[in-house]
Length: 375
Image (tube, rainbow, N blue to C red; front, side, top):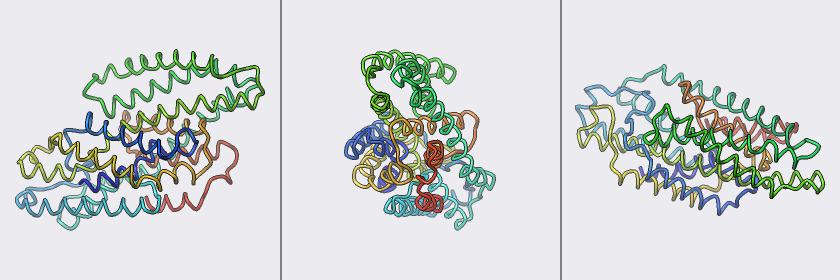
């Protein structure tokens, strides 16, 4: 479970920090440090203490399997090892893959061998997510970047436009991201019906802060190109903030992918598996958090460089659009009950940005093909 946590940290961190590195908002070393801290904090402070033992309901374990605890435990060890091995190979070649789908695939493989029931409708939903995630995320990223380009970047005075529109954009961004964080990671702290209100309150604070920064940072008495550069610098701050929130959310939400099979073994030992949910002790969450942070710090570079630099050239404005669109897609999908993958959504957003910039040849088709094949 610790090794799987490390592999997950080395690979899935690309979802939150790869684009920030690619745009130059932060250095690789800074990204590794920030990511390790935020992922660990999210996993330990707000990780899933109640972990569903059978991820996404793809397999059903009958009474026969439960009557043989040793066979069941060995099956879950095989899930852990198989998932770790695949994610380690993908990370070695810099391929961003979905940890959730990797765990699910391992469960299906072990389930087929052990005679567990396989929920084919759940498997079909996961297959559909390979298409749904990139399409929805890409559409939102395409629209958002074009709006940003027309209202600010290509306006006669980017500085004046930034001062006018940036507070509203900050409001939308922080409302979406805080709602995303509350719904995925901190659901136990705020009642579901109050999440939109808390999100909008956070957005208002962000709007005031961004308005103040824009007034002092962006100058209208310089050339248009210089104004664009100052706007890009502003978006570096927003991008780093976005990346930190997504990394924290990832650590709190996806640590269950790494410790879920181990939690099932623990549940079999303690007898709590029959309830369908297993309460993970805090030391298990700490183990998962340490593994994620260690994997990110030591092995996170290849995937981060693939996402941030090898698919398309990124700058802070379009990198910000990628991160916001990814978070918005996952949030909307969660509310609607649609099956999506954060990793797949991110890649779809990056490709859409490449198209939106008007330079389709900038999209590295070879790298993109390798990523699609790994899915």
